[in-house]
Amino acid sequence: MTREDAYQLLTEYTKSPNLIKHALAVEAAMRFYARKFGGDEETWGITGLLHDFDYEQWPDLKDHPFKGAEILRERGYPEEIIRGVLAHADHSGVQRDSMMEKAIFAVDELTGFIIAVALVRPGKSLDDVDARAIKKKMKDKAFARAVSREDLIRGAEELGLPVDVHFDNVVAAMKSVDGLVG
Image (cartoon, rainbow, N blue to C red; front, side, top):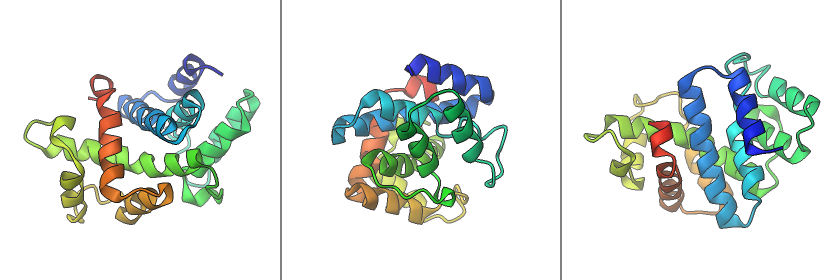
């Protein structure tokens, strides 16, 4: 499967511009980590692009990401990508064994949190976001309250990286698609 095929599938099921931007941000972070950890950049990127493609139509946790996994299987996607999609969500019960599976969990919520941090900074830009700014906003429990701070930290731990390094890595990755994610 190509990146173009994956993007077509994403936009077939996802119409929300914000969810598409989220998918692009996660894809960029996954590609960054594929390069860092010696993974296949295309596989990791496609996993990031598709991890939430079913969410808009099936937002209930009993369905998401399970409906997406069914669709991916029907369309012949590799099991590695399907496991990655399932592994991004704790409730799926899929244990994160590979670095790709750990990375998708580590970057998913963090990308959204980073965008939220950027939007409240004076310049409303990723250029104004770093680990220090992210950690400061993490202390404000009312800010982006749906994001589990524990999961943000656990993601870095699962990757074997210091939190500051992980946060700065994901910001750097997102800057590569800044024009696409706003």
